[in-house]
Image (cartoon, one colour):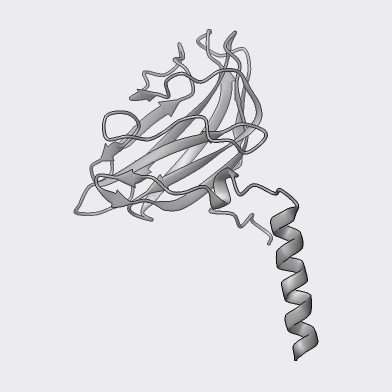
Length: 168
């Protein structure tokens, strides 16, 4: 038993000394939405925001039958560093039952966004965390040409339940 404790202690010390920072969509602190701690609902790898013409757009629908919910989208760069902060006045989005809202990393010609995430620079190979106070939200995510309608390019991004990919 003592040898197991020593091994665990060595692993812990090694981890702490290795300089590994906790970050990214899995272990960054969750924001407050409508005054309540949000839940991590979905993770989206492959987020891109190219200020010349590529945006990532999130379309989320409430599946609640009788009450509204709040959700938000957090963007992380390729190093797992959070790029936006959800506040009551920016990114804390309310959804009534059955309602859909569109959030994007930049304005697009194709969609009339309900919220454009402010002050994002170029992001390549980033990720997103969709957070909500309810699990009854469903989202679709597209990466698309932001300057043309119809877009000259558009591709769906996989939406993963929290951090469990289909097939795991």
